[in-house]
Image (tube, rainbow, N blue to C red; front, side, top):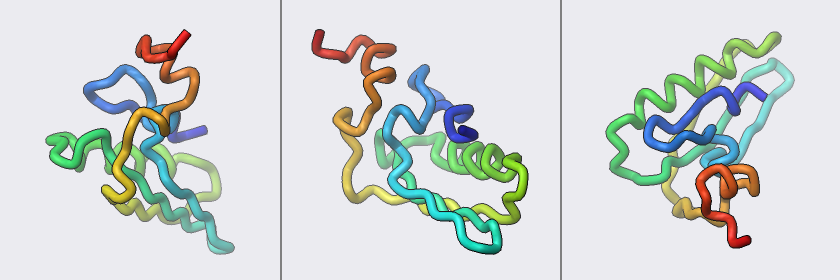
Length: 94
């Protein structure tokens, strides 16, 4: 998946496994809409991360257009992370 190639600049885990992607929609014209968040609303790298998401998804064969909406509701927390991300960051409860 293309979104697993994009990493949060401050955390060594991809944004998909971090749970930053809230929604992905693809229409009949191969336009992709992505709703995502960041781990903190005041992230100085927000524009960079959004551009990385757009670039990664545009590289998927057949995709014609990508729109990324950055949202902060619901607020992100670690419960959105995949099990792999929790283990990678040492946050699993084992």
